[in-house]
Image (cartoon, rainbow, N blue to C red; front, side):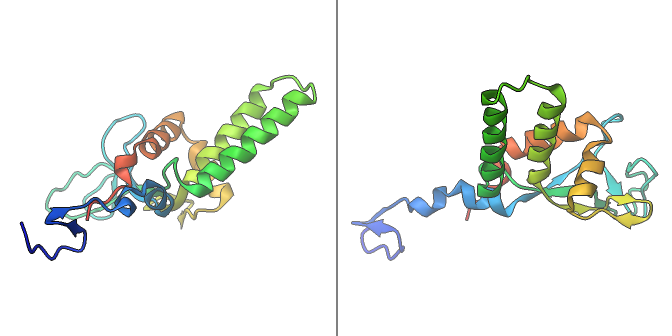
Length: 164
């Protein structure tokens, strides 16, 4: 491959650019995650051709996917939230406060809320959910499975990495 004019080649050998390994930047940008119905197990859609559970029932139609934009756990924003929550837990322990399941639940909810940056096709009383704290808390309060889906998605780096 002598004479190769690739920008990352040296002596005709293609070199690895370290910036291609930046998974934190992609985790911060987030990625779309399609929701699965927490009880029925089907991928969820909205619009023409769907039923009230989000099932795509009319294949002649082209509904939109129901989902969220989710940050990855490597996101600097999520990591900062995790540091703050760990610091608060350590302070409580140092101050002699007993471990409280409600405190643990609250910390977990704060962390999972920090993962969500947008809702797509999810409504509450006819209004689209926004990525506001109260809408996130309402969303996650509907089913523990939703927490599980989002955290499992956020954990997988491949969901955020886009090969060029």
